[in-house]
Length: 136
Image (cartoon, rainbow, N blue to C red):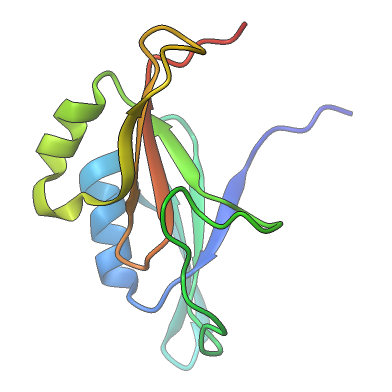
C-alpha cells in the first residue's frame, strides 16, 4: 500500500512566534485548529506544497538544551529543510529572523551549485535552507 508524507509534529512554547515565523518565511497558514480544552490548541499549519506542521502546546519542560549547528547528531530528528532558489537572497529577505547556527556552506564537490545554511526558528529548532540540490 502506498503512503504519502503528511506532517511533522512539533511542540512549542510560543505558538504565535512560531506561526508568524513559518507564515512569513515559508508560506504556512492555519489549516485546522482543534480545541484541546484548558485554553490549549492543536494547530495544523500548511504550506502551498501540502507540507504540514502539527503544532502541540507543551505539557512539560524541555529536559536538555536544544542542539546547534545542523541539529543533533544523536538518533532523532536532526532538522527540517526547505529548498529555495538562492540561499543568500533568502537570508537577506529574512533579516534578523535568520539566526544562523551554521553556514552558509557550499557542497560543490558533491553537487555543483549546492549551498546550504542552517538557522534556528523561534523555538530553537534547526531549519535548513538549501539551493541547488539534485538527485543522482
